[in-house]
Structures are given as structure tokens and as C-alpha cells.
Image (cartoon, rainbow, N blue to C red; front, top):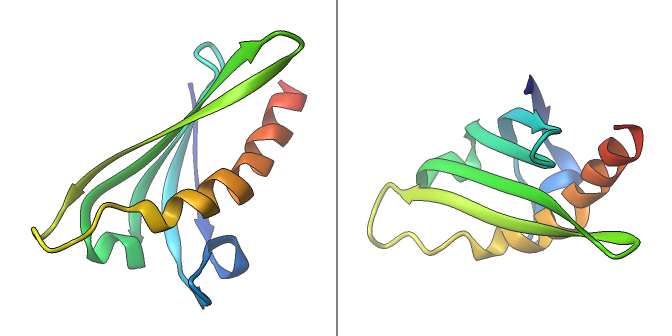
Amino acid sequence: MEKRCRKWEGTSLLLEGQSEVFKEKVELDDANRSVTQVGIEGEVMKDYKTFKPIYQVVPKGTGSLVKLSIEYEKLREDVPAPNKYVTVMSNDVTKDLDAHIMTA
């Protein structure tokens, strides 16, 4: 499994008209066709003790599907589920994932 860190900011996380910073550790697992982003710091970590989106590529016919799951733990009971991040993750991040798959 390959591990690397990157800082992700600007339009990559443009949520509800505001830019957010998300620093993450990225784990690439080619054997399981998955990418895991382990949140380290940033705005999302103000509400969640842990925040870990997991993308898994599932072959289907001549193409593939990407399954997204998010493991998270709220810091407080009043914090909502991280639904606002799903659109960004499913649109912007899957472009990065697609680029990695094409080179694997």
C-alpha cells in the first residue's frame, strides 16, 4: 500500500460558496482498488474527531463503479452527518481517482 500526504485547498473543496482547507494522508491500495483519505487537519476536523472517506473501484462490465463510504466520529452531538462533502468528493475527487486508475 502506497502512502503519501498532500494539502488540499481552494476550489477542490468549494462548499456552499466557501473554500475550505483539508489536510489528509492518502492511502492507495491497488490490490483492493481503494483510496482512503485520512483527515489530519482543516475545517472538517473542527466538527469531527475522525474523518475518513474511502473510495473503492468495483469492476462492472467494460467499466467500473466507484463506491464511496465515509467513516467519521462527531466531536459533538449537534454536528450533522458530513453530507455536504459528498458532492465534492463524488465529483472532484473521483477525477483524481480516475487518473490514478488509468496509470495503474
